[in-house]
Length: 244
Image 1 (cartoon, one colour):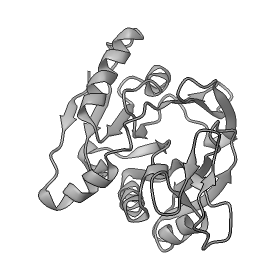
Image 2 (cartoon, one colour):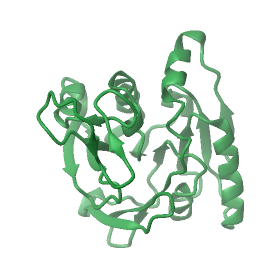
Image 3 (cartoon, one colour):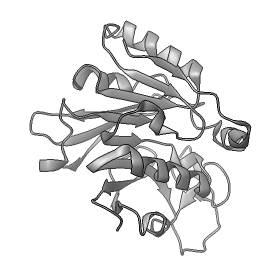
């Protein structure tokens, strides 16, 4: 099995850890499932809700078993199990702020009969994906941006830019601002969730993500609706050759 890595942040990163501490307190039962026709499907099972599936892309967008996947906010791997089962041995990389959840993930794998599969898990509080010493074909952050102030999202995107291979794709979900750009009124994202402009869970105007990666090697695309049970929308960032 791959190494379970513990990274201790220097003191100047402690505020980030405090800000991000709520990301992973709720279980994310989430998986990226790929069929032989190379279509990407995402299955979400959130807080016992029924699964919701949506095809995000086809053709060259399909995740293949030989690809390497970075699962940002993997938690206890209840969704990551599907990745581990589908991908070639050793090609799943899970990232989380909480070391205890990663340990629980090992136990989830054993329960699923996957205890002998190799994978790499990293605990870190500042998106230091370089600690993996590996670049990735795909990365996924489900229900991560929804809990983060924007400057912390900027750090994530900066680290993702270096972590992806050329042509690599990063999918991330977010709550979309339902009004004008300067809207600050809370809104009901779903029956269970109210999103806010300035507190967790956050909503964002999609164009702020376009602005964030302007001039970088990441190309922004808004996928939008994809039948998420709590109405999160999907973003896609593709690593291009050189700066944009």
